Amino acid sequence: MSSIRQEKVATLIKQELSIIFQREASMHFEGLFITVTLVRMSPDLGVAKVYLSFMTVKDTEAALKVVKKERNWTRHHLAGVIGKQVRRIPELQFYIDDSLDYYDAIEKALKA
Image (tube, rainbow, N blue to C red; front, side, top):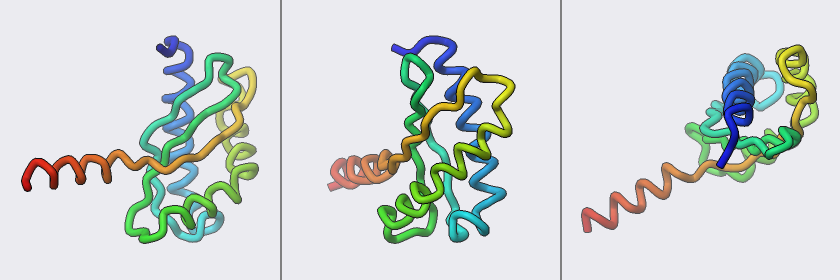
């Protein structure tokens, strides 16, 4: 179970990363349409697990590699935005959010 502080920092990071991905998509992320679906913080607030969803992308693994390649730039840009609100900027770990695929599989199974 996460603490209130973890949830607040996770929400802040989710909002700011969403803005970063929206504004910088063409320059740093090859024009990908990236949605931040979930952020989970470690108990010491040192690591942020960021779950992403990609729209209109057939190869999500390749898209994830593009985001991971820009991890240091993203963390540095995030530090410029939230640096005054948190003590240290967490390390960012990016994952693919496959909850929509799971939902579709369940939906198809129920209809069959």
